[in-house]
Length: 87
Image 1 (cartoon, rainbow, N blue to C red):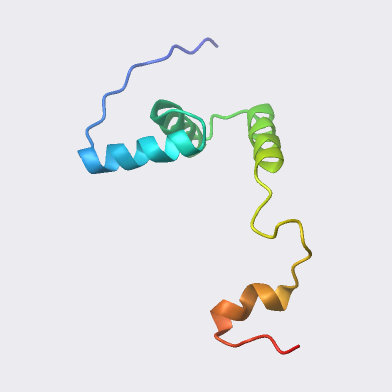
Image 2 (cartoon, helix red, strand yellow):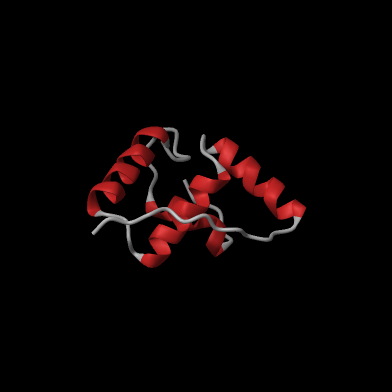
């Protein structure tokens, strides 16, 4: 089955659009691509290969906040529990 791309018009306020543009810029993509990816996820139309490629891209581009150091579970929950770690 061949699917055709359809143009879609959205109405959003200027502030929302500017924030979306900034997020897209930070992620190295476009607002159009962000919305398309969101709709594809929402509708469940992304193929397994596309999902895998996206995950692999994220794994290679984002190292997380640990700075590659080992993080213990109790360290992760300190802020949530409101108590300092005892050393």
